Image (cartoon, rainbow, N blue to C red):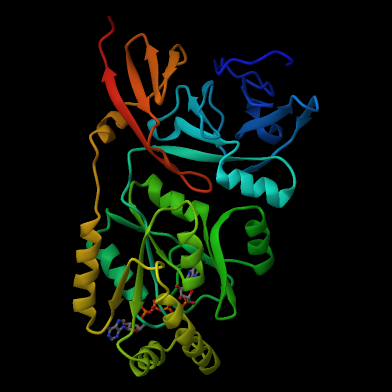
Length: 377
Ligand SMILES: Nc1ncnc2c1ncn2[C@@H]1O[C@H](COP(=O)(O)OP(=O)(O)OP(=O)(O)O)[C@@H](O)[C@H]1O
Ligand SMILES: Nc1nc2c(ncn2[C@@H]2O[C@H](COP(=O)(O)O)[C@@H](O)[C@H]2O)c(=O)[nH]1
């Protein structure tokens, strides 16, 4: 291990518990492959510190990639390693291991120990997720249901976790994942949540998985979260459109909350008190991109659709190439600046990593396939 490792190294068939690739960045060597915890479920990571001559067992954040029968690694110059899994499906072959990105640096600082984070790579740019906030009873859920009903294949709802009790008509896994407080607190500590907040006396949070599941379906993700959550997401790597829904008046908000009939009198009072704070915070400069008043429901819905259509950005040309993207075991790699060519007997792919966006704890987007030659020379 004392010698300088190559910038990238193409791995070979998996041998149980063996690390497949070693990649050096500065004073560290990253051994990637084998299985995490001998579980044979996900790719493992070990770090060798050249300065101390010791192996480190880093805390690993993010959803880990499942094992494949080989992979290649390319060190990028922004604290990430690009991992290309061979013989994997198009939506599972591109991964990033973040070793020194701002997210990982923050985690290392908090832990006082080594950390890395996985992030799945996504070709192209899905339209940005939509964060919808506003006081309880203003009509967020009603507007979101209307969108999902009219455009079922365009939008997907991020199903939050909450420690509050289910309401009569709420379905587990559809409206919320109802959780034990201790379990949810542990998952938060384990880095499984994009954001969380104490809202009206209960814990609510968006798991990274909730957002990823929607992205996996190539749908635009809608998050219904309170203003504290929106503030957190605004400062995270997740680029989103932030919409705040206001009631036409305090009296109308109270009327709607009572008419819904889902809350005890204590809860109604608490939610109305919190509404005042949320309405104040909702107007903080730079937090929300759009503010909509939900007076007439139909008019508000039409306005919501109009502003969502404005920033729609679907179907880049490389989406079709993505459907054929598969890396055979036998291939060669080369990297020139931000372009990585993957050549194999029947053709080649050229990946462009110059415009990466997002990253751990969510997906890494903005990767494009520049060209594809299908005929072998
Ligand atoms: N424009 C509107 N005019 C009258 N009633 C409305 C309007 N929009 C929604 N409502 C009604 O107001 C009640 C509260 O709406 P909804 O449950 O969608 O609010 P919410 O913002 O999602 O609340 P929470 O944050 O507590 O989940 C519902 O009974 C809904 O039918
Ligand atoms: N920060 C978060 N807030 C959330 C999340 N899911 C829902 N919420 C907000 O909670 C209140 C109350 O919801 P209710 O269903 O109990 O009426 C509402 O303002 C939601 O926007 C979340 O994951 N994170």
